[in-house]
Length: 443
Image 1 (tube, rainbow, N blue to C red):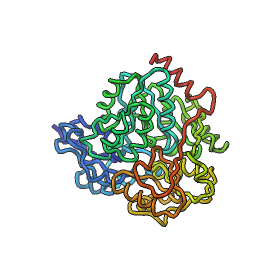
Image 2 (image 1 turned 60 degrees about the vertical axis):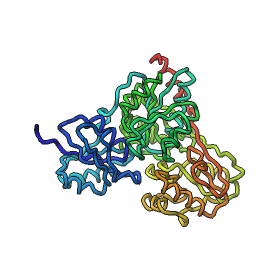
Image 3 (image 1 turned 180 degrees about the vertical axis):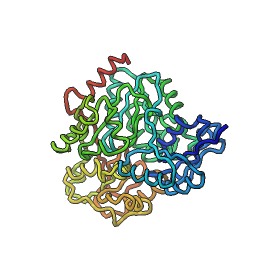
Image 4 (image 1 turned 30 degrees about the horizontal axis):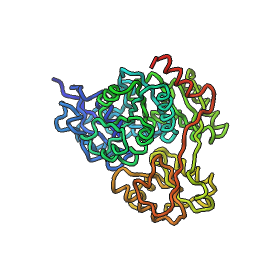
């Protein structure tokens, strides 16, 4: 047998594993010598376990920091490097390509088509062009419509296997207790909990063939609830992509979000109630260039504050959804918008009060200024989040996370939740398209 081609997969603890499982796990001509990890803290220096890696990898596969990439290539005489994570600019990709090619290895992007699984059930995919487009609210809107039609949607959530991988091969979340039992991070709870509260079951984990099989066994229709701006892991019959007019142009300049626009049957211009006409026009023009056959609909993202009077005239600290504020590049979210609309006397700058890993996040993402991202990938980070919030000199804390953060951290000041939803903004709207699709598919 000829010598196996040595390969590295660059990832962030999710997409990279799926690329390996679908494209390389059973290929005896390829040896994946390592994954590299980026974006998410504390997911490097682990090992992809043998139970997931398969018989060709009896010792599993090491997961190493992305900073070690050049050393890994030299150490193992790596021939190819596959880039397999999401929400990065094409300029960033060019820089990574340069790093790889300087080592003598070949650089390639993951093949989205090759990694999409076939389902025995109809599938709706909800994806986006960037983190923080409002995709979660749209996913819940679509699920609500399907349930009103008498269907049982099985929700496949984009992977976030940041814990013990041997315990996360296939995960099923049907109750709030399941979140605690399976030691979910704040980021996982933000995505799973709203679905659970509406009566849906969420499936996630590390091996999506097995996860899809589990969902199909108790569902009439599969809903792919994408993460960041990643591509679907399941071949969709109805492909919905969100674009964000608050970041016009990003639909064409971020990977793999551009791919999502090019492949979508329906493109939703979210946040149309917050964006200017010129920005919406720019986004429409880019959609027309990238995918002239797509149906384009408008959506609104209204923000609601639980108790506006508790914020009016007060000095407010704002805590936001972590990924949206950090690698999503927004720097703010629903909480900031709600606090301003309620007439807060000031949005308190948290930077003088940062602790530990929250301080490190501000150093990594210098665009952060006015809000604290609710980072909670582990106990240490949650402790630093709690300490930072409680150090800030303010009158009230506005919490813009999708879950009740006070259930996770103890806040020593009054806390008011800000939430957002999805509303139809045009006719025909997304709901009409989904209902028509379900009727044609005879779901």
